[in-house]
Length: 474
Image (tube, rainbow, N blue to C red):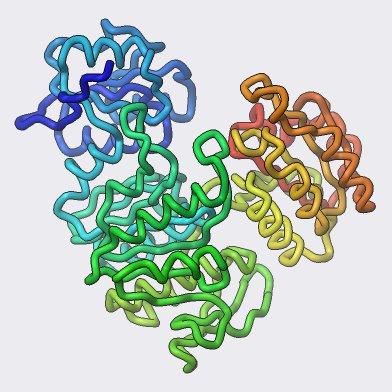
């Protein structure tokens, strides 16, 4: 499997097959290709709602599991998902048969983004929210943008769109591309404008340490064209170090007086979060949004800067932010029963957990905040942040920790200790409870929550459908 000569996209493609089609990005790509008129099939090991329904509604035939026979001889191109290993039966079939194949970023570039001006959002945190805001602001201003985002944008009820305008908004993921391309996904894109929200250590299954992460971002930054613009978060020391190594036009955003875009006065008038912005030290405009948290204001600040540079008026930006409904799984209220509100969030990295808890607590200071956390990522199930996680829950009133369900994936000497985590939280004076499974968390919450409580559930996975099950149990 060393011969990669067919890692290319041929002319006159008509039929495309996607291996591991049920991933968020792969499913969006499949739907885009279908909308563009290609015949699309796909396969995956875990075919279940909501992604299976999404694909079926788009008229895409899905095969359960992986088998070489799923790839017909008349398939012109096979798109290989990031999760696909070299030993996958369909990957083996592709290489042995000599069929043309490519990665998801290659396909997105070739079929969707090749004639567009790319607005690329990169960074360890905030990519989905910032991308969603940008896509909505461009749409609201009449730019008719395309986009592909790692979460469902509520205003569109979709994570993708094919527009006729010149711009496409995309997330730039630092994760590797495919088994035959271990470079970061974002290295495939040449941005017209880019955002760098922050650089921290994450993805311990891919990166050795922080320096490895920084080297990857440095490579990306070095490739940004001189005529392009990078909007960089000024309060991140790693970002400040890296942006000195590029040739592009630079605009900084943050809370520093020297920033091109400065977050100024902040007030909360529930449900509105209000803030004023300065541009190059001078008052620019005041905005309000229903998205809570300083981190979300920073996401909005980057989007405001780009929108203004693209010629969108202050008035249109203001209207757009007020009408923006957010992205699913980003501080999303899933429901309320008996006066108890269930909130869902994708937070899993310590920084994201801390900012999410703080945002919810500051928005509802009079309510008790119950934080429910599942360490599920390849990083959080390792001891990488063993001593950091206990420091980020201080704003929670009650904490429920689920023991990782897939800990066997991690070498024993590298595993995260949930029991130590719980003990360290208790040592900080925090009311903490550790559970072996989701059922026991639901039982505990049913018995120990009261009207007025906010239950914030944080995981990058489905968490055994805890949100709907808890609402039903309440």
